[in-house]
Length: 180
Image (cartoon, rainbow, N blue to C red; front, side, top):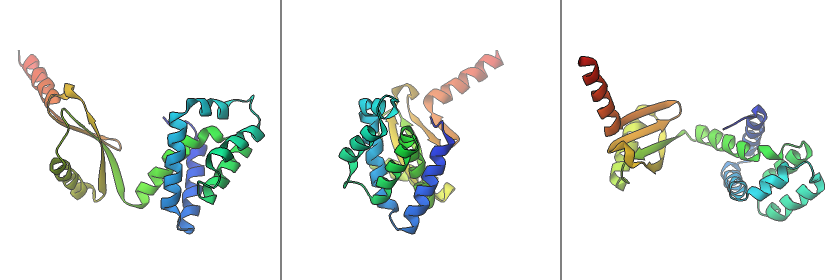
């Protein structure tokens, strides 16, 4: 969950700079890689958030990890965040950056929940249906949840489309209970 408004401001500035420099895709990959490193290395996050670790030590750690491996814009962002004691915002900045990139590319990400994995043709048909309605390219993040019994649930932005058998059964149960 996002907590800091500053992370959106940093991401917006980063995205605008990358757009000017035609580096949106390269920086996107770098930000994803950095977020992955932070998400899979809790020890690194602990070090970056620790007030007991000096800026110099944090800079050395980040340089060792990323120097020469990321776009210069990303390297500058890391230095700026360290200078401003905002390094803990990196994961949020990466999330916001990817949201801005999706908006720029007219992409809508959605969570697709099914009881069993769908065949590729079924996913394509479902995506095409929602692309026609939203006028955006739909990219599904798939999850399997056997408790929905069948059908699907799609969570997209602030909407939930629940076409699951579990939901249908619950609605039927409540209508029968009221009818008694």
